[in-house]
Image 1: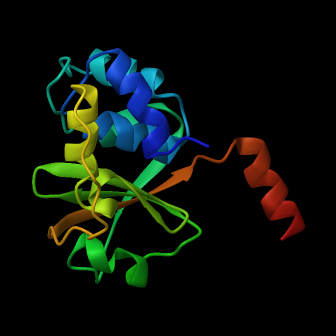
Image 2 (image 1 turned 180 degrees about the vertical axis):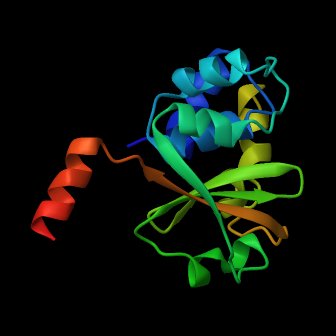
Length: 159
């Protein structure tokens, strides 16, 4: 299963920054980081620059993306309001993250993980704090795999 920490070595290998959308798409679809990177690049993302074309790319990867209403106001309160069995992309001011199966897959989950990853990329170590981010949520998208026509027929037949 793809998670935030499994994306870091690939990010470091390609000297990538400002790639929160790439990581979120990779994690929420459980597809390799480089596949998400290539698709976002095909949609206009430049290396080391952010982008907001995540929904279009996730749909292209064979998933449904639906904007949902969420009572959570900050990242710290997400787990109280989202179904822990589902996959979500959560947009906050200037950032996007993945929430998969009850786990926040992002540096914001552990406070200074991004700063620690950045400094580690440049050969400097730093202790990581455990405070969860208090950034305000702007949008929540539920991501589900598209069903094939055959599986829809089977569901109707056996329901």
